[in-house]
Image (cartoon, rainbow, N blue to C red; front, top):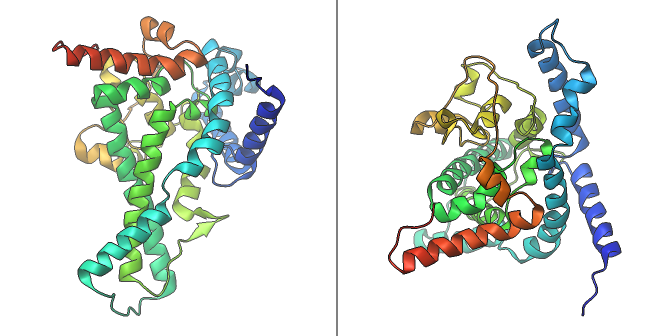
Length: 329
């Protein structure tokens, strides 16, 4: 019988978490956590009314959220899946550079060599950075929407929505199949944009970055990304929330209230929801209940169930479809 080296797994976990805390490409980098704390202090002064105001500690770190059974499941689930994903799955995935190389060759074979281009390097870098973030977010909107609308995909995406409370760790409460689909779509869309720009601007290509992160993605992380998965309500106001998704809007996306279903699919931009009719802009602070209900909570109540039960549900659906019945819902 093969022995499990828990010491090695724990070391891997610590290394992964250290990378998340130090890498500017991770939402859990201390810079983004600090900015989220500053924005949470603003929310505390804005939304926690005098006379009913809790202490700052109770507002930021309520035991009912951070020690909720759902949050504890998040911590264990992430401890199991994140190191495995980082060390075993990611290295085997196709990458955006690979996709862009193949697509660029195909474009060159189809259209011939690219013509010289005199556009300034700084302009190219800014255009490329903007194109990447817009295309990636458009991809995120549609992949996310499909995960809600396609029954087989929903079974895996349910893992994320089964959280009954939200903390920044809840962002990583995603089934590996869900993560795999997102990663593949990311590689394809990034590769496509990169190949297009390399053909049009053959003199070279590099995005505008801050600490190695696309400047627009850096701004997203800096201005409240970690509050999207939290108990802290922060609205940007109706005008802004037609363009950019606020933490409050994403919390509404997690709501169990039927009037919030299939709303606010966007990751960074609300404009896709606005264009395609799925936008929900709150007019005031709302009290939200999260999760999928008692039955799904029982079925997805542990880290093991979060990993295994989506496969079981998909198998039941496939079996029902194979014998001519209706897919299990």
